[in-house]
Length: 260
Image (tube, rainbow, N blue to C red):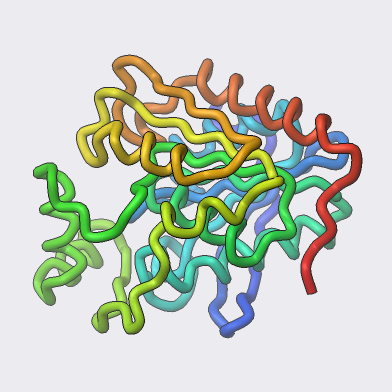
């Protein structure tokens, strides 16, 4: 069976009025994971469902489709305004009684949860997996293809037809802060950076750059023979991430107070 427990469907709205499709797996206790997917993915995909079920052993899970992805409204800004999408999920978790929030993001989602925790705060731990440390990286063939998809009209049409992802036609103005530029503001909230040494999109230097720019408490897991993001995430890795999150939030005497 694909799902033992069917997620509770949620419709969320961001502060700038974008409708966000989400799903909630209830969990015991006061901890909830906000699951943030990578570019062109969706919380409804089997690989994200599998990760959600693994994390659900440790707490509640709210998976979201970022704007422009899946059944959500709007257009993707590839890491900029998506901070508001995470904020809507955090608010939904709070409304359901969770007092400890763990942001868990993969690839683009990893960059977004870093930016949310740094710029918005109000969460208790952050896990960033296979995330870029900086923008405009074109050092690998897969990333050159990604930039073609984002920057060219034909590329945006292709990814809309092939993956259902709608990308904003206008570029960033102004350019948002890169993850490495703001990650130091996350502390004293615990941060876990996970990166594979076989990542075909972002080489290991991105994980090191993000980790080195962060302040303590922080951890870096370099995963041997690990590829990229959700597709490469094994059940063992998801289990270890869940255990790390439980340990990280339990080490904090009181939950983080949400910012106004």
